[in-house]
Image (cartoon, rainbow over all chains, first blue to last red; front, top):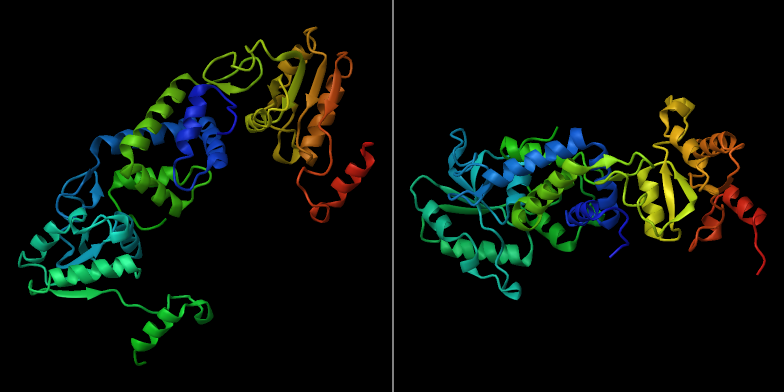
Length: 201
Length: 201
C-alpha cells in the first residue's frame, strides 16, 4: 500500500484505476492525474460511457456474447451466415475473430474451457444452448475456435463428442506457422502440425 | 481505426479507455471487457469515483495543487512546516515527493516549466502567487524541486532571480548518483555533479 498523496477521493480513484488490467499502482496515478486534468474531454465522457454500459449491458441469451442489447447485435445481424456457428471460450476470443474480419458467422460463447484442475466442469459452461442451436436445423457446421491448450483441446473433444449425433459438421481452426512467424522461434509441436497439414502450391 | 467488434456503446467505451495513459488500443479492449465482467465490483465504483471527483475537484487557489477541497488538504494541514515552500512544476511531482515522504512542507505548483521553444513564458506559470507567498513573512526557504532538464534549470534560474530581493533562502535538490544506481550506467554530467558535491564519511 503506497503512501497516500492526495485526498481520500483521489486516492480511491487511483486505487480503483490500479485494478484495471494494463494499469499498475504507478500508472494508475499517472492515469488519474491525466483524467483529472482532462476531466471535460476524457473523464466526463468516460463516466457517461460507464453509466450507459452499466445501465444496458447484458449477456445475450442466444449466444452468451456481451452487448447492450439482448439478443446481441451479432445474433440479430441478418447478413451473417446462419449455417455456421463459431464456438469460442470467451467474449475476448469473439472480439479477436471479429477484429480479424475473416468470418461472417454467428458465435457461441462457452464462458470458459473445461478445466478439471480449476474445478470447471461441463455444467459450468454454456453448453445446453449450444446443443439446442446445433439441432435447430439451420446450423450445418460448428467451428470450434478454441485455444491450442490442454484445456482448449479437452473442451473441443468434449463438444465434438456431444455433437456426434447432431448431424452437423464439427471443425476446428488449423494449426500451423503464425503469419509473420519465424520458424526458429516456433515450438516443435507447431512445426510438426504445420508439416502434417502442409498444402500444395 | 481497428474494426468495430461490439455495439457502438462498447466501442465508444473502448475508444475512450484507449486515451487513458498506460492503455493502448489493444489493452483498452482488454480493460473494457474486464470492466464489463466486473461491472459490480469495478466499473460501478469507478463510475461513482469519477462522478465524485468531477463534482468536487478544483485547483487550490493557494498552491495550484489539485484536490476536492480549496484550499487543498496540504495547504490546510497545520502539521506541515510553514517556513518551507517546495516549488514543483506539476502535480505529478508533488505526488512523487509526497510518496517519498521525505519532507513535511507546503508546496507551490507552477503548472509547467519555462520553455521558449514551446512558447511557455513566465506569464503562463503560477508565479505571481509564489512571489506573494515568498513575501508573506512566514516562509524562510523556497526549495526548487524542478527537473534537471534544460527547461527545469531555466525555470529554477528565473525563480531564483525573481526571489533575489525577497530575503528568503532559495535552494535546489542535490544532483548525484541515484540510490541503487550503477556508476557505469550514469551519464558524465551526473557523475561530475556527484564528484563536485562529494561528502565526507
